[in-house]
Picture 1 (cartoon, helix red, strand yellow):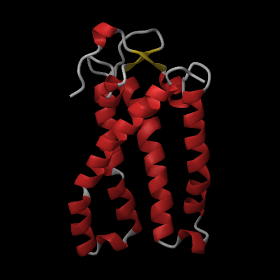
Picture 2 (picture 1 turned 90 degrees about the vertical axis):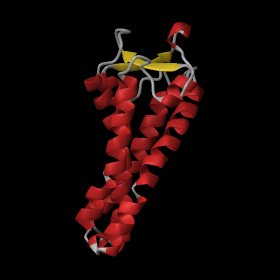
Picture 3 (picture 1 turned 180 degrees about the vertical axis):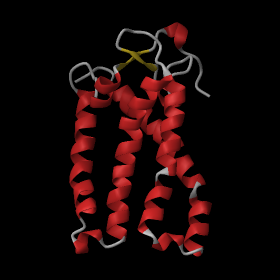
Picture 4 (picture 1 turned 90 degrees about the horizontal axis):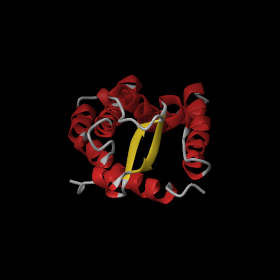
Length: 175
């Protein structure tokens, strides 16, 4: 098992608490949309559900490409993201990494939930079924990537990044 796996898992859980706050902040908009009748339109619900994962992705990319190279959770657990050459992460790579890590799996999960809510399982909707069959293997591959070998996940390999222990001089109190 990768020696950083436990710290990475804890850091991700901590980051997800923040992402949950982003999702919670959109509840009033959802209530307004429901009362206006927009919630009856599957396409609207799917597009609206993309807002929290997109915001979380942008936030994570900004933090990982910042001076600490880390999200709040990674800073808390002494980790940082860098490119495979050991250099600070540029925003484009951080955005690619977090799109693959956060936005796509999260929205894939939304596709399953929205499809189910609109009767996708009983109707045999191919999008709902495909999203269902993709979601859990994707999560499994992502978790396995953290646990084994050097801990480079699929999204790290595609983005050319690596999560490493942060040097002591890079650590600062998490805010």
